[in-house]
Amino acid sequence: MFGSGAYNPRGKTLSDAINRNQHVLLQKDIEQYLEKIPQSIATYWEGASIWENSSSEKGFVLAFREEKERGLELSIDLARSYNQGAIYQFSMIDTPGSWFFPEQFNIGGVALNGFMSVKKGCSLVEFNT
Image (cartoon, rainbow, N blue to C red; front, side, top):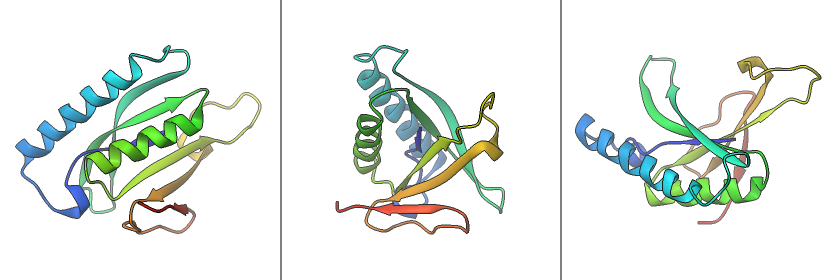
């Protein structure tokens, strides 16, 4: 699973109206891409990033049951298209009978041009842009 958004590109604070418009455009791009893929393989839902200071930004989580590399590539392409600094990658710990609870996720990030601070316990995977 991969999380990203379209708010405040590269940390530049934009108006709420512009951020909401970018969010809607990102959703349309995701829907257009995923309409070619069976829902049993890939889906998405709305999410948000929330920080210690209680600020937040809306975004989306893309979930790929199969073809995870394709999901990573799509997530990176969308993040670049919306000039975002990072995407988040989530993976469930393989525990029998486990459900999707926050404590059962390994959370890491993929940096675009190294623009991401990583908190303790997160892993970072860098790549060339």
